[in-house]
Length: 211
Image 1 (cartoon, helix red, strand yellow):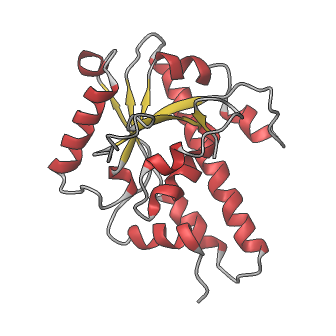
Image 2 (image 1 turned 90 degrees about the vertical axis):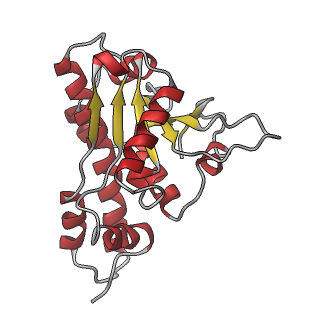
């Protein structure tokens, strides 16, 4: 039977030994209601889903003969893991979140075994303000992206980053446009370091990884 290409096939293979895939998300701001934050999480899921199925459609258009049900099956196992605890995480620094995430990963014996355990998302007040004011419905109705629209981003933190002492540019985390979270996931699939994605940040939106 024909199989999905590249990153989709690798993810399908990983799911033989992992029950789910998707980012771990830390909430470090509690200025908005739980309902507003829940809407933000749903929006991020929709961004990932839209990119995922766009790639699936492109693969199908290449007449690969891959059963579309394979993509549906992969997506059915997607789930964001949300870490929210105001007593521990409200206003927490990137370093504190990384330390907690690394401890959580090690406790499960999953260090560097799967993307879910190689990086996590942080939504702080700065990120939250860019993510408010939109919805899943608005995203689904879009037919194209306009450059002057708001760049909605999160911060993605790498676990155990390999930092070059001679290069102080990459701090071990970066801002990532919500539309390219699936692209970043793919970039990290083969064990690449996040610094390679950092190097691709350009003038489209200074300081934010846009794929």
